[in-house]
Image (cartoon, one colour):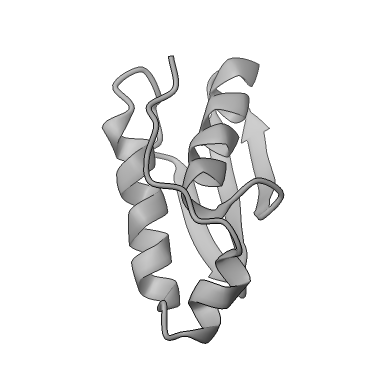
Length: 87
């Protein structure tokens, strides 16, 4: 089950209107922490323009997919770059 959070379509437009990168990063981090089944303690979130970059380690391939979907719910589909590794 993936929790649904408020999604942003046209994320680039929000950034241009003063939607800060730090608030976007905080929103992604909060969404990841809110999922009780996902261990996100080793995931780092960086915001580069309209993209959320997820780096670090996850336990399973399912966690990789789950973290990506959660981040996409916040920043929009196609705006997540996953650089996570499975341990």
